[in-house]
Image 1: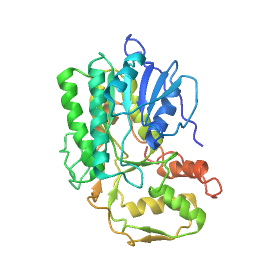
Image 2: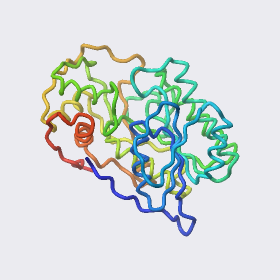
Image 3: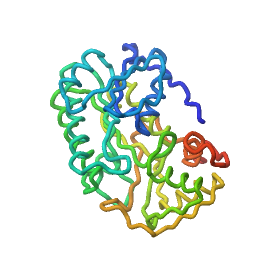
Image 4: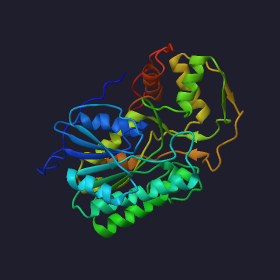
Length: 335
């Protein structure tokens, strides 16, 4: 499994070093990797807020956990007031895993919890709020999407995050909350579980069963989850003014999904019976979802560096250890 490198602590030109972080969503694919990276910060003290029933991925010095009801604004406020974070990363979301929750439950969680947390931070003072939105929030354009492109979708998860994205930016502007909005595009890697695309394919390889898929003609920008997590952490530890605002996180590449999957399997040396076209496209799924990552590269000094095949190899090592796979290249050829 990949060893994540230690991120250097940030002092930001003599300002107090950021060492106190709150993280939500640490049981998820992205949040767990964010927690891993933050825990490697020198002197980091992290409070991970969890919903009831969410798993604890790691036990480590410097990390404490607290379970609460995210709909309980007073409970959220007390947790933040007691901990006094300098930076908060909100990764928690509903609708990412399969099976999907009920439509209105998904909407309520993604919007209401984001606004509750922003309101709590507005009452506390100068704590940076890093809100993890999604590339699915954008209106489809057929080209790489920029941060100032319109948010407009009927995709339930994308719409709920778009609404939270707009509202939290309005609230932050009104009440002076230092805000960074990150919009990750597709990603996969360690802790990617359930019935999502790549774990489903690895499970099929292990069980020698076929996988029914859509035609795979949709264009997808896929990255390793550890790269996306590194972008989130870069935003959370940096207090410079030009790291406030909105940033896309993705590879910037635009292959067909079918080509993405087949290239990964080729690098891993896996033979899987992929039955393309046996399923219909998901309703309201965009056909072209690619990030323009110019701003993240320039202001966060971030870009995707890890090959997707390596990220899926890591997933195989941790979640499907009986599966025999070749070790692929780790770094992107042009990264």
